[in-house]
Image 1: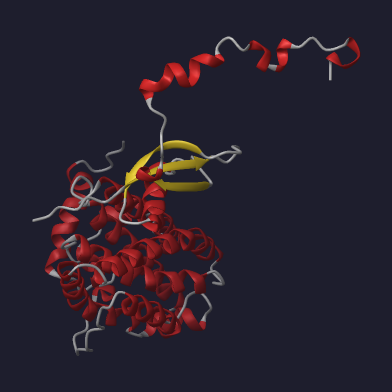
Image 2 (image 1 turned 30 degrees about the horizontal axis):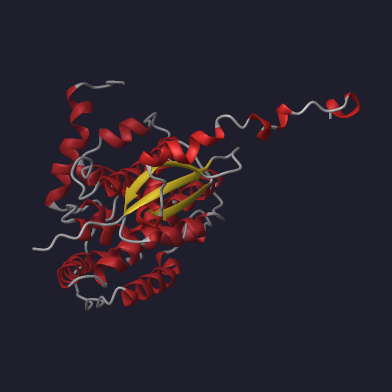
Length: 251
Length: 95
């Protein structure tokens, strides 16, 4: 029971990083300015690096001989455990940085808490990733503030990005047996534990950005349970195409 | 529509073993804080530095290249300004 939850939990962390990394890499060659293109590519590479460590760890936990590549490239969409938020299309630059902000504000307290995980491998990954995530948060929050508290046009776009993304953040804190199981066994963290830190960050940055927190809705996305949007298949088609067409291909 | 470009910032980076910040290039950014982040993302991806300075390019005042003869040539024949010009007594020559 705990072993299954443990694996599931690590896969969630891994897939969040993998899928957002894939999304952000789509900006390469398309960002509004060179400086931000490199910044987004750097974030993407950090996230893909995190996912490699986590997927390798998941492969060992699973004990079925799958390595990071097989887990990254040879699953079908229902087997991915990422939050729905990270698979949504990038939208404009404002929506991209708003999502990076909402997600890294969640990832930061998660890594913080995982520093004391009983899973020493996971604790080591958290220690490395925390530094990266703190930078992602700083970079994205600074953009949210500048665009939110910017021109009429940038403010309107940031507010609409936030309105679009907000309902998907409910999923961060949907409690169920995996979280409870890893929390009681000291391997992971219960969502409720990181919620106050997330809310505090989000509230203070959005206030500074003069953006309004959207109203709660009854909508709940379910990406972490393997129920994905129609966007996921397209993302995977592009991401997996090389391994599917040329199995075992190497650089 | 009026098009406002972000200002240009000159970037100075101090390497791990370096004592001084060296000029390494420039970025466009809306303000100093974002210029520091852009410099981090553009110029320190391969462990080039441990400290960054940014200066707005229009805050740098440069000497005029056309004034080079009167600015710098007069130093050419003043070899006595170099310490090696002076022969020290043997007792202190190998300090």
